[in-house]
Image (tube, rainbow, N blue to C red; front, side, top):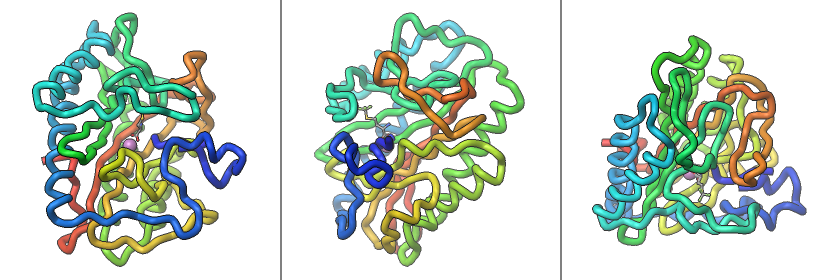
Length: 284
Ligand code: MF3
Ligand code: CO
């Protein structure tokens, strides 16, 4: 199964209808954006950055993940933006996502539900993933933030995941191919002995939160390997487990957990292909 943050079309064709991300079959279409559209996506991207930056500063012992949710909702409202995740219909679950944020703590990979009962504690990590729609265009980004002092291994997990994203961003160039992006993440993560989550992938983004193509964090040779062209925008989002790559669904049916209980990190940026190289829309 593969979701954005989309079910794996190839791994199980019967499950393809459960996919809530982009389809990835032969002849799929990657929508290219004009310069004017990219400026709109930039505005969305910067707002997402501002929200995540503020939330990262708020993170501390005793803060709950619902506190983060509430702060994010306020900031988006004040900016006149629509929270992209809230009420987003997810076919795999059969319902609408009820929050503005995904807050995934420790062994939660993605889609953790904000809760007043989830108080952050020293040694925890929290992945905060959010998106907005502003003037018809989407932005989507995620960061993983440590609380207090985390173990050296978890520290390395955060660093390697972030580095993998940066290496992938550097491949977002006209003339390169999608596998250059996927392979950059895979090489760095696997080379460091961590587990790449298979079931969830990155995605194109624009006037929809999830557009084609799917962007796995590894080279999946069953997929197409399109050439990158100016105006394409990729939401690249490595999800990396300190232990094995397997994931499982929590009883709440939303939260993805690591199969082995190991901690998991998630970083995400939206990156446009431009004549001047990669343009990371979701940071200043
Ligand atoms: N984590 C996903 C992404 O970054 C979005 C989750 S959609 C939700 O693409 F609404 F279910 F949260
Ligand atoms: Co995303």
